[in-house]
Image 1 (cartoon, helix red, strand yellow):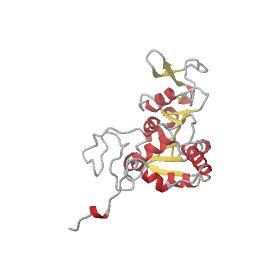
Image 2 (cartoon, helix red, strand yellow; image 1 turned 135 degrees about the horizontal axis):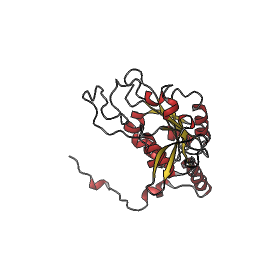
Image 3 (cartoon, one colour; image 1 turned 90 degrees about the vertical axis):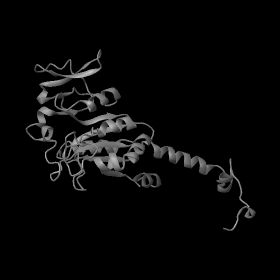
Image 4 (tube, one colour; image 1 turned 135 degrees about the vertical axis):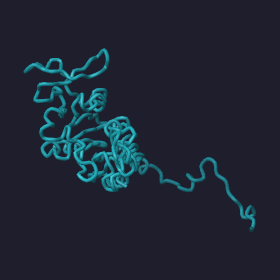
Length: 264
């Protein structure tokens, strides 16, 4: 529906508000094609790792061991990563934030809106009813400084008050956490939001040994689907009128005469 609205009204700003269940399970097929087509819309995916509106069934992002009405003994399903899914589907803008990040979120939403193409923003959202405190390890006020990595284009990837950072090993194509002496950042990676390999590394970092990467992780604009459709329509409209009958009869077609019908 959102795709149709945007294509019919290209001047509109279209925002799609969805969740981890709707966006990656029920509507996963729609999400995949939206991202690969690169329609100029904004997607805000609220991830609470549970089906919060349908009585707490486990969702595609629920962790192994999650107990829910549908998995009373604990889920054995491997969780999906929304941002990894988006990157694999061909998204050109990927960001992460937290529902309580009142200072950081507006800037991320402004960046998403300014981006021409599909903007995918994962928002960690606490479900106080069915999955309370699941993100506390990096969203709690006391835990956040040491476990959140705020990615800013052109800036070193530092966290824990600048005492730790991420270093890249070119030989093994891996990242590691390094402890830093005050002011020493030479070994630390500098965030490049246009580098797809770096985006994949930041998205795939396992939380615990590594911090949670937040902010604009990947931004590499490409031609949009709606612009291509509009251009095609203008070219077709400038040519000779379309002949629907000729189109239907083109190629393999046949006629069924009345004598071919028999009463039963």
